[in-house]
Image 1: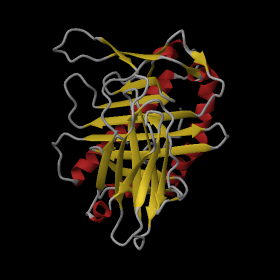
Image 2: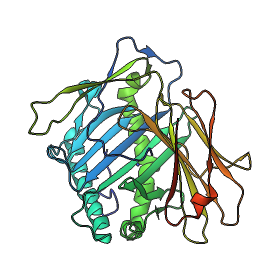
Image 3: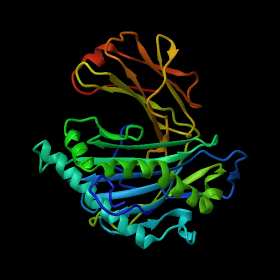
Image 4: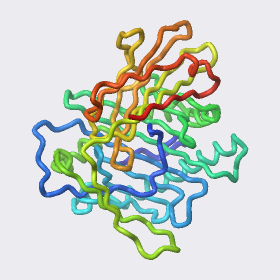
Length: 355
């Protein structure tokens, strides 16, 4: 996954529920009974990065997991310092140069953990236990359109996201203003980030599909078999099995962020749902609103999925806004109303509804 060298943007060596530390990775073992789907796609290439300031004994301080749709296909962590294929991808020859990929992930680890340290320094908490996560990638849809996403979270809160249309990094946390300045210190940094999402990532995904499409187009019963790293005090490494239930309903969380007097962004996040298909949209006074984000569906790392949509609300608008969620696990569509009292609170606001 080659990205050009140089600079100190987020990956210039070149994230629901909320993003959570993933300390065990899913390894997909398709059952022989899986059936080939008649309509393939969409396809997503996504990366989940997690950095821990104080990892538990036996666990890495940094790890990266790459996904093709819901299937984890390689893993890297700060203990092994190696990018290694997972599950059926171990048997696929020529899909990636794993030594080159390992070098890339080592460089990304350095920048990622440096950013975590910068955030902790901003909050004058150099000794606390904190989590920094990033999720980024691209999607190729059945109608030939594309999607892209790149965002970060600090201790489970939205931190910063990339707007490829501007292009610019959008701070969602006070400490992220410093991060934005650092990642935009040279104009080429944001241009490189946009080029990665619009050109390099889709190109990689198309290349991977030459090897992986036959696995990704299978539908049927899945079983996740995961060798988990055991702390030194425990005996050996166990093999954990996760059997997917038929459906898992989504938990829906509403949040907002805005500077005083500025347009407010409302975010509707659905997470912990299965299977993958879901539809999210915002309405105002019953009318569907054009959303700011594209509703990309991402794996959560535990066998379920997450997706979100955002809408902008000018400060003078007082009409009620609601997020609507449709999923096969729900007997009827779910509507979650954004409470104006929540929106009046300072800082970041949130309301959660579980089904």
